[in-house]
Amino acid sequence: MSALFNFQSLLSVILLLICTCAYLRSLFPSIIDRNKTGLLGTFWKLARIGERKSPWIGAACVIMAFTVLFWS
Image (cartoon, rainbow, N blue to C red; front, top):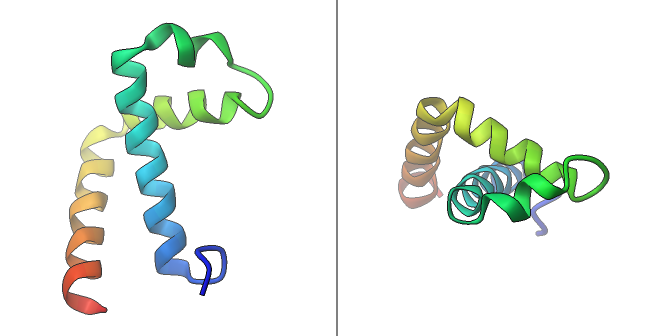
């Protein structure tokens, strides 16, 4: 089943995107900050969410890891 139709997989993909964009922005800020609008602006927005809500995103990643490892 694809990640679009399985809610748990969709949440995993979104969390991974947020964490990846925030990490890449910390390494290469000019690449992410250059595109603030359009389709590539989505990655900038995900990076901002990852930076501003990092304790909540980290907790969600830990909860998702336990869910994937022990619930499935």
